[in-house]
Length: 53
Image (cartoon, rainbow, N blue to C red; front, side, top):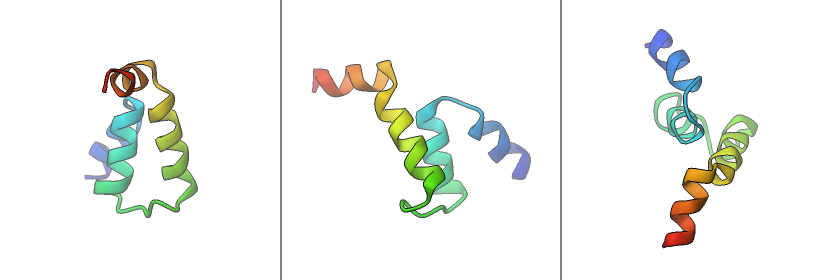
């Protein structure tokens, strides 16, 4: 699992965020989770989807 988690953490910002929260069980208050969430929301693909909604 450690190898898989490490591989996921190298992925897209939204993959990194969910891997930290769902697989690594990091709390939302974790600096790593907060940084991953910010990066996810700043990603052009994600922000484009949010704007469409």
